[in-house]
Structure formats: C-alpha cells, structure tokens
Image (cartoon, rainbow, N blue to C red; front, top):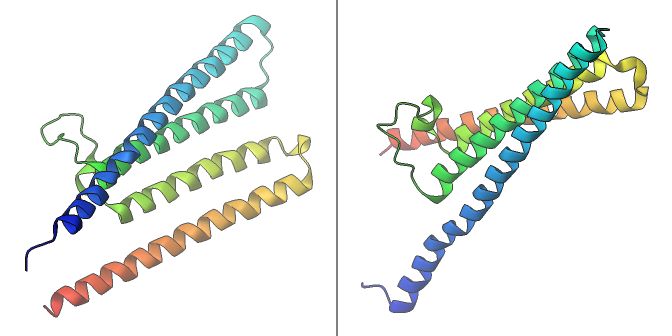
Length: 179
C-alpha cells in the first residue's frame, strides 16, 4: 500500500530534524576553542611562575600539571562527543580514506560512544580526585568525602552501562541466531 503524502512529509521532517543537532556540535567546537585558550593561559602561568620565582613548589607544579591534564581530558571528551555524536546521530563523515581518521570512529555507535564517554568521565573524575588528595590539607573533609562518593557513582554508572550493553549485545546475538 503506497504511503499517503502527509505521512511521507511527516517522516521526511522527522528524519531531517537530526540536522537541528548540527549547531549544538558547532557550539561544542567553540567550547573546544575556549579549552585550548584556558590550557595555554594555565601553561603560560606555570612556565612564568617557574622561571620568575626560582622557588619551585613541587606540589603546586603537580596541581597545575594535573589541571592541564584535566583540560586535555575534557577536550578529548569534547572531540568524542563532537565527532562520534555527529557521525552517529546526524550524518556520516566521509573519512574512510583520511590518514588521520581515529581508529574508534570506524566502529562507533551509540553503545560504543556511551562506554567511551563514561570512561572519559571516570578519567576526568580521577584527575579531580587526585588533585583533591594532593591538596587535602587545604580542603574540608566534607568536600573530600563527596568527591569520593561522586567518583564511586561514576564508576558504578559506567559498570551498569557496560552490563546493559553486554545484555543488549547478547540479546541481539540470540535473536540473530533464531532468524
């Protein structure tokens, strides 16, 4: 039975609506630029502080370096969301022949993206927690406790996502075997 014009138009509009996400990914690119700027400012403060003062406080350097690593990890998270999200939800990127195509992009889907994002968030949380432990003398016990609890929640959430993804893959494998 042929589709009615209204149904066909509605389906086309729904499918086209994925392009409404494109400005969101462009906004994340702007956020990436802000993180590059933040990284360069923090790096210049580190270099300037070491060369001007001559008095090197190893703990302060370690905290600043961990902050730089944190910025890099957040930037990596942004790249995963921008590229992976666009590829998964908006449109394919024609990068098959590009020499710099990320390896993970060839098999990206919503499940893989969720796992990669949760792993990145745990890494970022770990850096924050390490900074907290290094600077524990200057923090309240309450703040430290909540950071540990939040980190554990991230870990448990990631494990739950991996478990659900595994169940879904097993279900798909069983249903394909019955076809």
